[in-house]
Image (cartoon, rainbow, N blue to C red; front, side, top):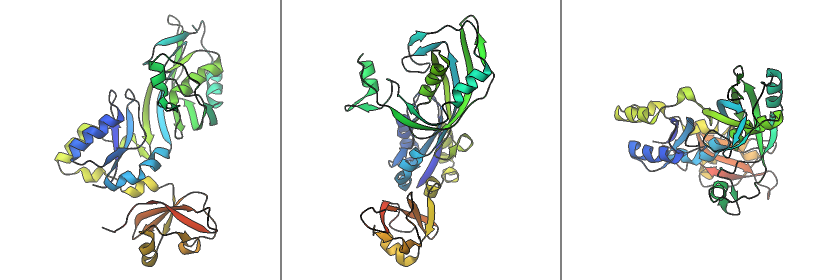
Length: 308
């Protein structure tokens, strides 16, 4: 089996757990996932099978869509509901819808985030969560994140007893975005402690919730001999790349990783992003600009060396 499978990861499992279980269900070793999900977060986890593992990095780089909940009035050391409360700012009255929406709108576009201490970002060869668990502090690197949209989807609810205020949101964002940090920073914009109190990933790598199967559903489909119905071709992971169809003669060179010229593939200008070369309707290689050669292209990733 070669291709891409949309898996619905249930809470309580790591992304690696899912791959481990799938290897047993599908009786194959060559399986990988694109875009790690925190253990407590359910949602879409792109799974690459066989030769599909060659496009994992491109699925991971693509945009993601989440829905969740933000709560004002307290903050935790993990910036989500799993952590210990480290700050409280009781709300004696609720924020207006206009103030909340303005705070969220201010974070649309390219923003700078400081990842939470409980994250997998590396500093001096160690993960931030390793420092956090050891009770150590370290300067966290700032990171750029791209937020396509960030919107409130419900009316805010103020709890006068707890002195908190919560609402649900939907966000469309790029690779490397920490949604819990987005929630925390929303509070900072409002002058309040804040925490992400719920999160679900609705889409990743072009795959959606509606396309996804749970592990149990994958096992059933496998047992019934109909899993192929749900496996998407490798090409699905390359939708964002410009497609160029090549001749039999050029395929003979491309499958061996030959360098090409713009004229070889019918281009007049150097592409700003990699291009996908197709032969007989199948993606066979990705090529990118070769800075050492004027009008030259070099292989970024060879996907196929023979046609089935």
